Length: 152
View 1 (cartoon, rainbow, N blue to C red):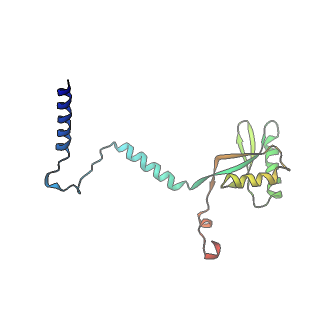
View 2: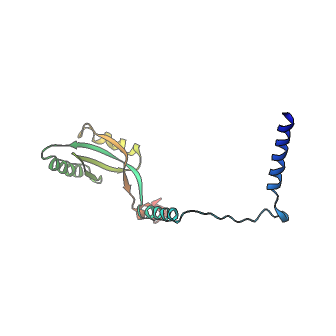
View 3: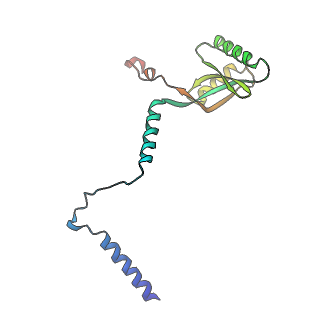
């Protein structure tokens, strides 16, 4: 039994040694050919094009209210305007998530930024919560690149 096992190991080692031999000894050059379905390449290209068009990053918003029932749409838009007038510079949104109208505030890049603003508005709007990574924040690429060294 040991002889058969030893003979098998010897044959495997010999086969691997021959398989690694490259005539001429030049191993630095080679040719790789990828064979695949054309549909896969088309799907990858569509994915790349979509990612180039959608220029967003994940962000955070604070959900101020979730309203349902009669006149909930009007109350949601009134709350949105109240937020925009009370906290200038902070954007407010009304999102319809059937059957509720949700009022959300802010375009925060980090959860910490959202939490700091949550502490500011908690007295006016109790029951607010941070909703993470649900709505991407649209990037204004012109504002992201500093124009002068003073902007850095």
